[in-house]
Length: 211
Picture 1 (cartoon, one colour):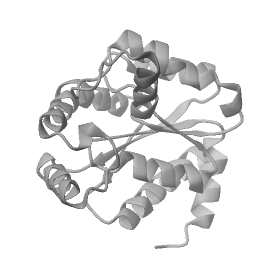
Picture 2 (cartoon, rainbow, N blue to C red):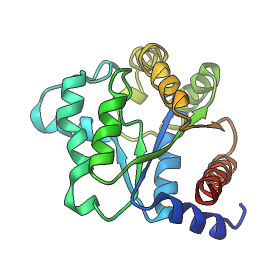
Picture 3 (cartoon, rainbow, N blue to C red):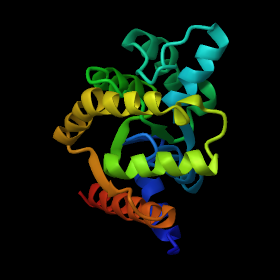
Picture 4 (cartoon, rainbow, N blue to C red):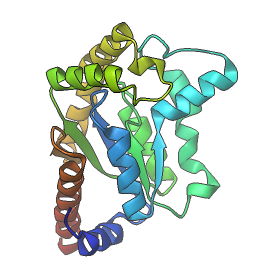
């Protein structure tokens, strides 16, 4: 992997306490890349899926067990308050699919900006449904996805694909219309994907700093 230290320094200067939101199909590597990017940038990582699953277990109210997205009102109540958490205020944020349902984007951007975590870039890890199907099948053999039932049940997995297709693709179109979307080829090694993320964020940072 390349030495990205100079590029990362430039990205950090541009990002400040802002946010980068990462989207992709199930099994596309959102959390893997998000956690790695957060570590590189000294940022905090927030996953809407993780937050919602934790709240479901705490409240015993289950909205996503069948692969569906949480209702918008539940998303607003459970996830958006994280932007204002005191322990996150002085850090940039790397977001894993915060606001997956078309119509939630403006509230997400508003909540982030009000908390001084303005969304400065949105990354889409592009990978075909056929390829994530292969990753799903491989995961069943390797059993490397932990205890998440939605990564083990084929019906749930395919519901998640359908939810992305119908509800999340328009979200990406919205961010594209704002000039925030960064397209990354997600169908390569983890190191190659990470390097492309850094290279494209660096190009964005340079352009903004020099404008």
